[in-house]
Image 1 (spheres, one colour):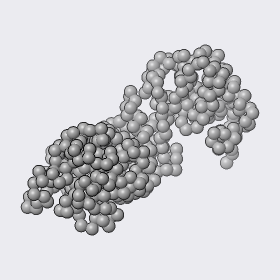
Image 2 (image 1 turned 120 degrees about the vertical axis):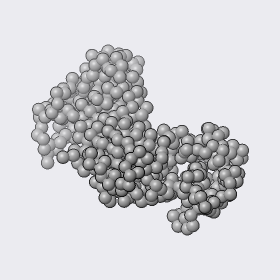
Image 3 (image 1 turned 180 degrees about the vertical axis):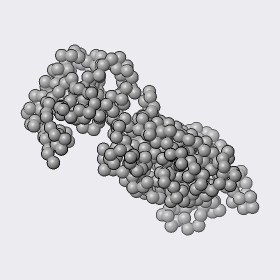
Image 4 (image 1 turned 135 degrees about the horizontal axis):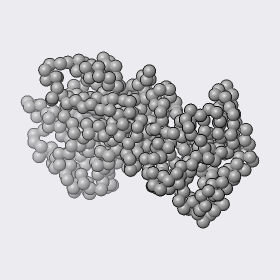
Amino acid sequence: MIDSKLLGLVINRLCYQLIENHDDFSNTVIIGMQPRGILLAENIVEKLRSIQPNNNIRYGIIDPTFYRDDFRSGGKQLIARPTEIPFNLQNQKVVLIDDVLYTGRTIRAGLEGMLEYGRPDSVELMVLIDRRFSRELPIEPKYIGKSVDSYDNQEVRVMWKKDGGEDKVILVSD
Amino acid sequence: MSDKKLSVKHLLGTKDLTLQDVELIFSQADEFKEVLSRPIKKVPSLRDITIANIFFENSTRTRLSFELAQKRLSADIVNFAAASSSVKKGETLVDTVNNILAMKVDMVVMRHASPGAALFLSQHINAAIVNAGDGTHEHPTQALLDAYSIREKLGTVKGKKVAIVGDITHSRVALSNIHLLKTLGAEVMLCGPTTLIPKHIESLGVKVEHNLRNALEWCDVANMLRIQLERQDVDVRYFPTLREYSLQYGLDKKLLDSLSKKIVVMHPGPINRGVEITSDVADSNQSIILQQVENGVAIRMAVIYLLAQNMEMRK
């Protein structure tokens, strides 16, 4: 769906969209969603820092596990991963970043967890892949890498060089 | 989401836990420690779970720690102390607990004076059981928080030398610690008067030493157990006087400072100050006694969280 060259361009575009809306990031923090969203978030933060080296970009990660609504209902084990938010979110603008937006349930859990760290002025959602028409909750992204129409039996996989592969996004069918 | 899960449905003792189980509990405890450092120290994960804390024996720290852990996980809890219950009227253990379960309780945390009480309950009751101490047998969450505190202080448990000093015979903490520390790859030495160390305990793969100074020179960590006055039989004297015990096996600042290296001092509480350790040792910077208490809540949150996921799925 997206190869490494296109992915670079998409990340570039997303960064400039952020700069357009958030200027010097003095009142904005970036939060990546565990587990896969932080890989995109790290790329975005790295790029932002190279574009605007004088700005202090604050970056945290949130793990939605404890806030999920499928605890003890799907037979899956929900194992928590680290959360690190070393700043108060009170009166900040938050950009929440995840790799794939599907039903919206993970984002809902992440939002609930995030609110434990203070009341932000606003929260915007950025996703690399928006799987349209499959939402189960009223959650919509503001920044989108690419929108795709996909079936429920398909899976979107985002791969990263940091993870030991190459940068790309693929659509897998059963 | 992950394939990792506990290999057990109940936490009856550390003997049943695999290395993977312990690593999983520790990794989740790390995350719960982070939760406990937040402005809002609570997560909603267990909001549909009800837990009964049933204590047939006295406890302050353990019961409080379990209760806090459950509240931080948003579970509903009911507390039950045997002293004020129908147990006094002659009700059996299974009947008592079944009556509590009839009120739709999912998990039972129990302390009982009889070794094996938790195992017995797990065979007759349809709920997840957490053993909070069964007589002189096991006290698994204490051992988990002890090992977790060692890992936190020294980076790892593997290869470390741990001396457990004091009344080994009557100590459930000692037995749980031995099993767990062996699983984690630590070396264990027991130290105390011959009357307070069970015969053939070496078969568990531990060393035995009767001289406190030798044990302390050998170890990286000294876990100083409490002298359990309530478990000393009236007719049997295990040592002549407390004063004599203290002189032989008590750890004071002079002894601690005279050692060739700085060891870590632990104590499961409650401390008999001046008997097994003196106040200046308990409050020294080599002691991690208060960290143990703090870690206890995170460890118990991890245990309850993981066991709750292993319970039958909600209909």
